Length: 317
Image 1: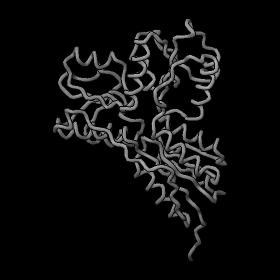
Image 2 (image 1 turned 45 degrees about the vertical axis):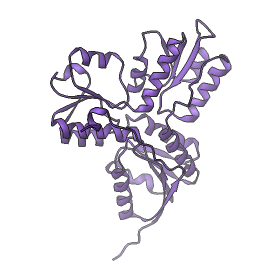
Image 3 (image 1 turned 90 degrees about the horizontal axis):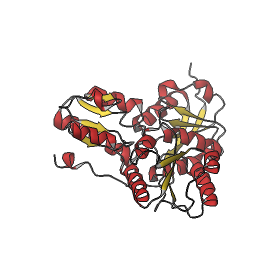
Image 4 (image 1 turned 90 degrees about the vertical axis):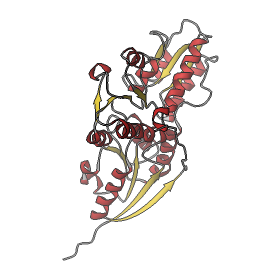
């Protein structure tokens, strides 16, 4: 006896998934393995996605927390989130061969922070404590040169020693709207605070949030494919809820989908964080099509054509 599958409208956000910085970082690991053989050591998760890490482990990458877990005679790669200056300094001291997979947009924030510091400014970094990108950015400058601002309350409470020598930079993966609210407080309290030349929140974070805002008001539920450790993926859930989705949740993989969540859903939104591979999105669409009569409608708000060059040691290979 044939059973009729219930209808489900799927709004598929674009852009979604890998950004140019993530794509570059993964290629660096793959091509280093190809050129130098296994094992290749990677300090911290190359990007915040367990599926990406597991696949690269299968190719011969070994992920470690610190350099002291790496031998001197094998290549080591620094993750896309960036590292404090002490890390490459230690690698050089040990005469290690290392490749830096830091996203160029994160490196841009590092350069801005250093420039402001040289100009005599105290730096305010808008970001989340403990995130590798924040640790890396704060580690570009001497201790005490940077104050972390996590919330509007932090921005209101900050008491500078010199009102006229302040600058701010931001973690690249934050919510555009939340950051704007914190920046507004800082600029109201400190009208002379130096701002970045260009908004630090990266193009990919902005584009993915814009795409979610475009679909959220029509959605009973928005699923954001991404790992719980991924800052930009968690922000997409928050953005979806603020933009009008009835419900939104993070989904590490289609295997973790709670089908009860879809019981009363007529319109489902789907996106993926900047470190989530596209095959997870396609797998999700496939399992949905097995249970529902799905109508998939792509909603593209920006077209991305950004690419970043590989390090010279690999580009010359």
